[in-house]
Image (cartoon, rainbow, N blue to C red; front, side):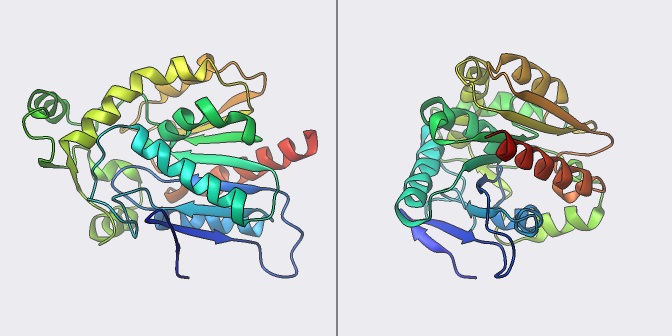
Length: 276
């Protein structure tokens, strides 16, 4: 399926198969760092089979989208990408309840985006949202990057996380490393923009009141589970919950616990629609 281009962003919009129930809601999916939205096909398929529509896209500099690979000058560049796709949805697609789903870096982007757009969404799902970095992130690389970014913002460094920490399935790790659409080097400017934004997330969360579901693997070494507890406490939402996936690594949609992950999301979405 060929993507649509929205402000140089590759966008895919999919509805359930003809003959299935009328879609009750649409989910806008935001992928994580160094990857692309095509790595979330399993999530898309689970949602489609449950009767939901899905819009996914590649952030600038990722996957099929335009732009310098893994480059932003400011974190709001990513927030602007979500805004462009959201406005395209409003212009081109049939109106229906809209939910946001962000994985890892996509979770941090989702929280930041909702600071100004929460009234447009019926709820938000955060999958291992980037906030508190885990032991799989190399602290030396981070420290050095912070020192030299002003002199060499375009300098590319090797991805600073243990890739085996994404999933217990070695085939998933192998596929990630060999995926030509993934980028395993990051610019210092991108790294600084992301690291500067993460401490701001609890303050932004305190402004959000829409329903929130956080899912996090108990054995995530890339983003610490404790950070999701802190974020959960920060949200002002009356309807907020944290679902811990025992034994899961950083990508629960690619781990042995994936069925629990998908079922939890679908159950929560159906509950939100019933309540509304």
